[in-house]
Image (cartoon, rainbow, N blue to C red; front, side):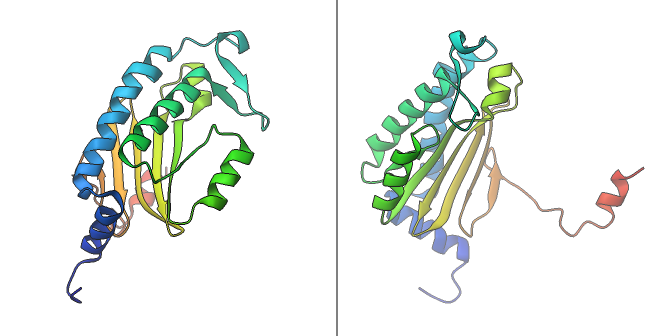
Length: 185
């Protein structure tokens, strides 16, 4: 590796070695699957829950879970295993003991999935929820994707690489003077 190589190229190469595809192909593959599964599983259920008999339950920590959460998680785990069978998936809706066992047995990489991030909003018919997926390798988050099915927006980034929204580079306003002051009355 030459010293002039950009950090994002190093990250891209590492992610490509890990997943066997170029980063853009990984992004397109994951996005396509997540979009389809949201269309098939999540959006048809949106705003149609009515209490525990309507597919909404409370988990032991008192947070909500819906039938759509578990169906989406199962479908995404199946899809991820179809392409990357050696990388386990830690899903938010897995029982805690199963999550802990998976983490302790995982020595290289693990997918971390929240099938419906914002379940309370989803169950209440509030259109602010998404599917969140990250890849953790050697204890570092090396890739992340957040997909909002209501707006068809996909945020994606990989370690040391740029962050994108719908494959367009996100720009930082970090150096813009007075932005916060402009918001104050």
